[in-house]
Length: 278
Length: 281
Image 1 (cartoon, rainbow over the protein chains, first blue to last red):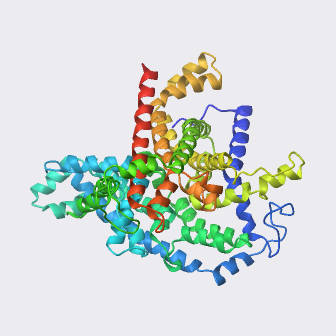
Image 2 (cartoon, rainbow over the protein chains, first blue to last red):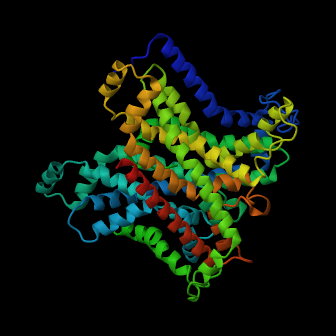
Image 3 (cartoon, each protein chain N blue to C red):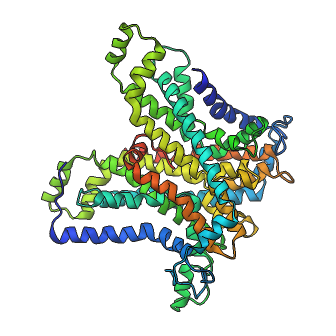
């Protein structure tokens, strides 16, 4: 990789620009969230409010964890995330494998449906999904929250592409050794697509953690709420002490940022390969 | 082995046809079926002023978002493209808004844009304006505020897509441009933009699909109401409200509006593709 042709004054200008953009990208998120560290009684709004806390305090976090259902929200989100990750991994690897194999009828039809699901707005089928999931008796349950994200179309296509990238010779060799389809799948194919599986797991986690519209439709009771719904609940309950809401927002942000920083490589790969929007 | 097929069938294929079927029935919210009523729901929805108001809001929102979302991330990608020391860190930090959930982001922006929030405090405090600007209560200001959040949050995501596209632009073209004495702007317009044209078309389509179904930003900025008298309500908010409300709602009507959203999305994508093809020829 060629390094750069930037030198001297141009390089300095570039760094200044980079820092200015950095402030624009992080300021609108970081500065409001600092309000969570304000001491009790310090103004969050209005003319007396300062951008940076005058007196740093963790009191809002204590209130958050002592008086609200936050632990329940986080637990619910983690449960839904775990179910989504497992179902996405299992189903996308089996489905992607099937879609990558030639010679069975219905393959191209299935592929067509999966591809159209990619551009199909979820918002235009959500009422039907609501009726279906309710009909199965999973309204206001964590299983109901999980169901529509059981397997993303993007995950299927990503795994199909990964399996297509494996050379035929490898399978032929295993075939001659007398290995059955299941053995070939688990012993030859799966180990080759570990990178793609990591992308699938990660994106499943992020999507499940952040999803808002579907949980909003399917959930009613407070103790079934995921983290994002819980946040809006805090907004209505703590309108007068917004510090607690901001503390909740930070709590919602920490896991996702931790995962992001430890797995950036896979993260960016996921975007480049499939155009998945989080 | 049949599991993925069943899932695709039940969660992708069936809802599509079921939505179309429901839109021709008198199904009530919280039920799953109804009797065939022909195009009655469509007549009702299409003669509902609230539907047109919501559609206009969504379309205006999309028309603001799409051009900016197609161009700004490309500028951002050009900025972080050269591998100067520390650029990896900048790329990762820029990405933080995209990975922060929309709910958290909207909540932070609410604190900035409220009547007594940071922006109004600064503007009023410095004497530039007398009355706070009502970013979150005025019909169009709320929509514009929502586009701001969408753009700010979506930029880094499309930046990564453009970075991948930029990596494929022939390096020697830049050297040739430099030899010709072309400045940064000229180089950008005559080398970078043509080099990533295919990606720009894809980004325009993706952001069109994404923005016509806008829900979360407007829902949260308006406190779940859609603004005073639902004036800032979007099409997705309308679908949810009509299709789910047990007292006055109608699942059939909501489904008809959902079919309209689908047709609108597809129609605008086809229009966009056609415009691009004309531009090329």
